[in-house]
Length: 284
Length: 284
Image (cartoon, chains in turn green, blue):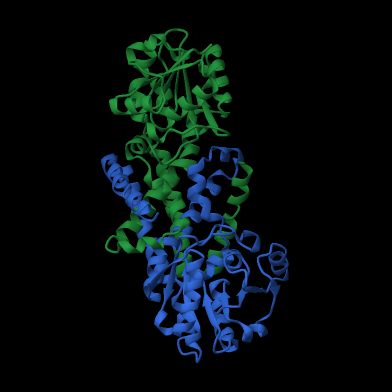
């Protein structure tokens, strides 16, 4: 039975998990731990958490959810694992999985840790960004499930299923490689689109009312938190660079087709890529 | 008074204009002209248009809306202008404005033409994609307004205001230059993101359930119609190539920062680009 949960980092993901869990299991007490006192106050006011706690309380935890930027996670996780009891489970929710799995690979409580990545979020952050039902029908990638004590994983995965997640099992190397394409590249693509447009238009503010829903959708991720994303790119450096090289090569080829007036080529590039429709529809 | 409107091209934009106009002015009869008989049948069934017509009927038109791909528009516009009466106005809705303005610059009925670009749309096309209220609070860029007969522009602009558009006046050169950044680049950015991911993941279909809402939003425009977009890129070739060069340079610089472990630089790039938040909020 899970009677209490300690969430370290009551932001978008930690806070949204808290809201969903409290909604489905009102008997569970959710404690919040955060280095920002302001965030804890907000989380309490918004009923995202039931009470504040500190790292010293973790020996009482049935479940600890570590939802902090991935650089902080790698530093905190071994200390958190030190503190939990034999019956406590620690999960992390980071967007990179190799470094976090490595840092506890030989930890004496490795079986009390489950590495996961819920593919869900928005471009906002902090407790105010927490929303109900964020995880409904969302994929939750679980890494190295075999390294976690069976009874502990079972009760946690039941809980995550209950709030709508679909579990998907993968090794951390494969996770980091694929997520670079499916998520990290999108963020850089959006950030650099935003940068290119801002640079060009900085002296002509009025121009931005030419922005339509297309620009808004494509640039949306450029609102994301640099404090969260810098350590992700750092941890997943090699994979992300590979995606950028592929992306830049494709953009350069498209540009050269245009330069050479090969508009049949331009047409075919777009026609072939329309295939993304079927892929995205297949996800529904 | 506008009693009838002839829409050439009853797709996403033409069809959505028809729906809004019929909604606000039920007394206006909307005729549809389309080279696809299937589109006309669909448009009739969906009540997007009241009746079918042909180019030969245009002498009876109070308002003609030319909403076809921009290569077809440049070819059709002079012929359409030939046919309208002295009291008829022709507007186009294309995403490029320089070529269309040039092609009728010396036309004897230039005063019966108004060049415009409503910044609105979705990634879908055809009459089934037509939606009500698409133009609510959307910018409508008007080019060379001084070249259109005053009484004709007045009645058309009143109608477009009534369906929610905000008019913005600009010369065609400035339009094409800025829209390359605010719209055309977003499309190529999305298409090449889609291509890069499809290429990498083509043998691993299951990977696409790692796609979250972020990827979906960033890649959305890659569903757009190549038949519509190829001629836009062709007509706006020089400006689009300039945006691509800027975008590729920024991506390359970002990649090099990562290679050189300059993650402070990476952080600052993102932090600075977060400014896009204020810009987009300013649009609401």
